[in-house]
Image (cartoon, rainbow, N blue to C red; front, side, top):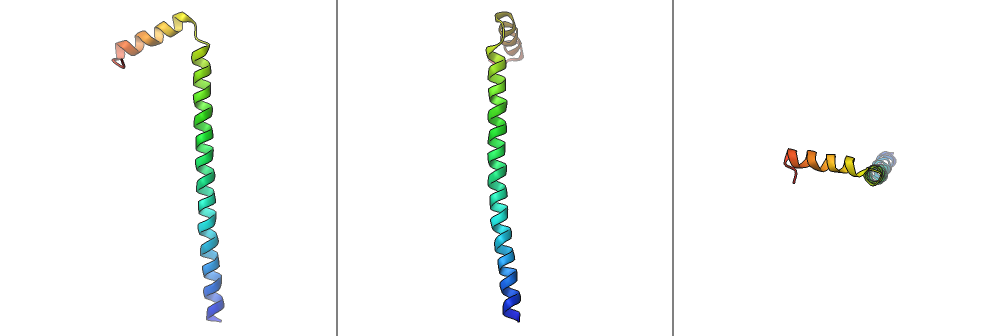
Length: 67
């Protein structure tokens, strides 16, 4: 009887570890996809900027000391 209990506990722990690894991998993948989407949106916004808007962004960066 004790062997069955230990076996059930071991299997439960093993399944929990496997589930945690799968969950972690899924969260990493979702995080990468969200970051990629955010980057694409920012790039699209940048590409749609007019020359005046781009000049304003560059001047603001220069004033803030980012260059």
